[in-house]
Image (cartoon, rainbow, N blue to C red; front, side, top):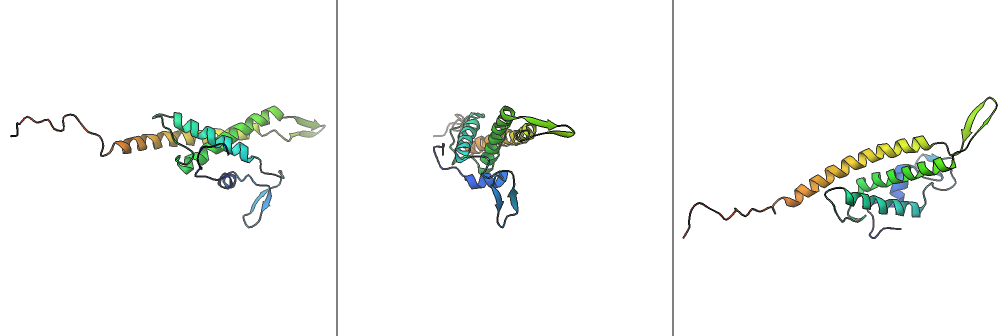
Length: 159
């Protein structure tokens, strides 16, 4: 995996969230009839975690978090967004539709708009929640530690 610390989400957590499974998963009711393998490789997920953490860190106030210190929900949503956006790029590059007479054009990689729409929804949630999380964390870090140079100042002289 391409991260420097253990993430709080696993590849299985992410695949479960995205329903990125091959075939039918017994006992879950999850079926993916179009793919023999999961859509996203372990390397894809590792790369997505690395860049999601980097993106988290550049949101103000700047931080130096690792995959193990980012909130699991924020990491899950951010990684899912990265993968949806990445897949939308692949879909655009490989999209070829075929039509035959009265049959409407069909294609294997023609879901770019749907992937992009999912990425936009996930992006909105990620950005909103990261901003609120960082503001809250920043405010909480000041509680009990914020001092003033006037704390010892007094109008009265105590002997």
